[in-house]
Image (cartoon, rainbow, N blue to C red):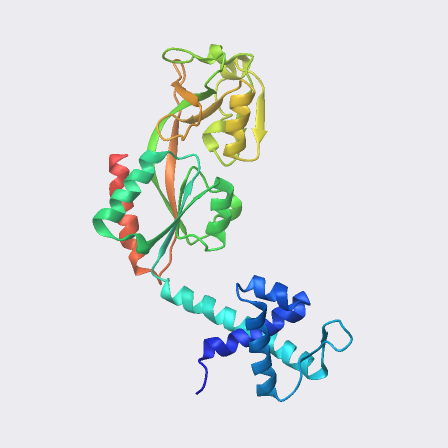
Length: 296
């Protein structure tokens, strides 16, 4: 009775692993089988090819001349099989909408996305990831995301097939740590920020607003730009600083967001998407996200 293709393939994988790891025991642990199972499968492979693949006469594991030929071809075969599996998965999942959501966006938006799934789709229709803004930019550019919900896409990653629309717009607030000396009961004025360091990141646009009044620049402390929003949060909380953030949808940790009494500036959260003609479902998802925008 012939073995199925998958079992035959395992013989080659076991053999390659034994050669690479120079150990039957290690190959067994890697594949979650016993050393005996590895030995049996390689013995069957040797019977099929008509000769010894591995010699242990000298005490060390050595690959025979025949073994070297089988090893090289087995590696090629396993590589092709792995690529085939990847391409099959891509075909099977071609209708799955891959959505990345900026890590600074709080649970309110995630709840809206869950409502969208519950009403119109199923969990299998989507692949969600909570990612840093810079990573979202890169994945969009690599076509590894269909949709990114966040606060900006830099010029480097903008191409003709990139579309966008606003999901929400709310005033900027001042984010401070839980134990900040900037704590206040209701709101913060620009003058209150004097002497404090303002932290910001290029991938959180409202945090680095520069084109405002001279009064603001003269009233407030120095500006420190960091790599990402997560670092920005840590800097704010541990260094008694502050950051400008979306006052409504910013995902704060152990901190607070206060409105600004004497300056108003808004921040847009946007939906960025790749125009993918192969994913017919994408148009429907975007249409429903536009409906969600009306509620946000």
